[in-house]
Amino acid sequence: MKLAILMEDTCGNPQCRSEHGLSVYIETNKHRLLVDTGATDAFLENAEVLGIDLKKVDTLILSHGHYDHAGGILAFREVNPDAEIYMQRSAAEDYYHGERYIGIDKRITGLSRVHLLDGDWRIDEELFLFSKITGRKYFAKSNLLLSKRVDGKNKQDSFGHEQCLVIAQGQEHTLVSGCAHNGILNILSRYQELFADEPKTVVSGFHMMKKGAYTQEETEMIQETAKQLARMDTVFYSGHCTGSPAMALMAPILQEKLIEIHSGMQICG
Image (cartoon, rainbow, N blue to C red; front, side, top):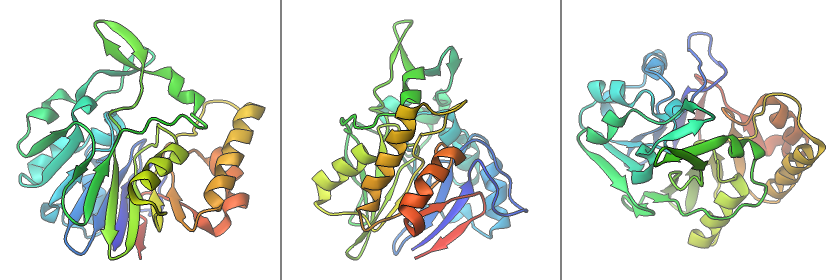
């Protein structure tokens, strides 16, 4: 399997652009995939730099309903009118950070070949989508700033619009998430309920980024998360909303099991 980071907050290739957003290109035995499209159409330029033909993408997965993951979908559709697009139906609802709208462009739901899902969905023997992540172990406090507007009032976002992709290649699984708003340990718990195993690889932001310093409680939560991840026989590729301070806290614990991603980075395995 081949992966390329088409967009991320930091740049790993001087020819590629970066922005606050995430987009991952994946080649499997059967598919050419996109998971998310960053905040703008800049991921298209990065794909060109990396020699990736997005016209050949057959499937686009939207991980959740925030602009920094969906901002390039309309531009992608102009380049590629045929790819199937999968998103949770609730990803099109109205999401806010304080009073700032951070949801997706509503025109996305009117595009051709858009599948609005209401929970788990198997695309084929290679690709499976799951949601319904209800655990709240080590739930990031930054999530408390995020809301959904219902009947003119903001209520705490439960992140039911978040979905994760499982890619099967033989007996090995890769788990791809966007921001892991539900918490990476809770996502892995749901994965284990479904598959009774551990993924070989995880590609995901951990949503640990914060303005200002961590409290002692937050520091301990990040370190304990890393300790529990380190017990798994899994390699974690992370970035975007994880944040450099959190990566620095986790790196001594996870060591070679934690790899930081950047725009323009290519991964084979």
